[in-house]
Amino acid sequence: MFDTLAYHTSVLYRDFTGYTSEKLEKLGLHFGLLFFLIYVGKHPGTTPSDLTAALRQDWGHSQRCITRLVDSGFLTKEKVGRRYQLDLTEKGREAFAVSHQVFFDWDEQRLAALSEQERATLLALLAKLRAAQKVGHHV
Image 1 (cartoon, rainbow, N blue to C red):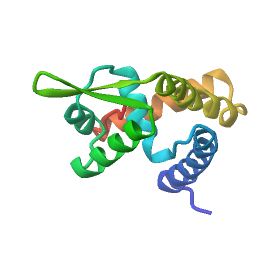
Image 2: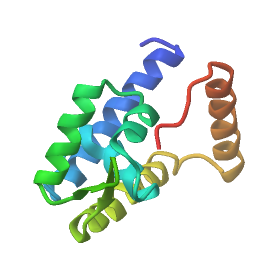
Image 3: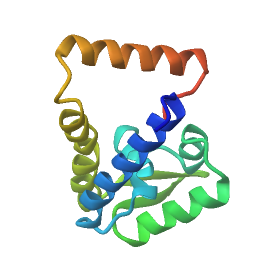
Image 4: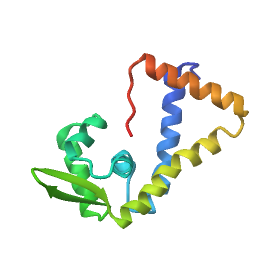
């Protein structure tokens, strides 16, 4: 159809979202909570404000997602001094493992047709593009 980065990115994003949603539904999660869970898993004891800033989220949206994860038993939110800290529960650690692994599994399936050199080149070029655009990491 279109031979543009935008087209290929949107097709890949839609495919990744569908693949990931299928895996997360089994855990009682949805795609919108994926990066919140992964961030807390990689940064135990993070604060809601640090999480919100790191994921570049609107404060209200971020708080609703945190509340949903706490109410669903994936996160704890404890007041320590004047701040709240977020940590994974046992259920959250299990979901983190699945959520983290989904990136590697999807890559393995979608990049199977490429050689190791082609994979490395593709990922290096995408990283260079992201760096040139000053697009940060979400996790």
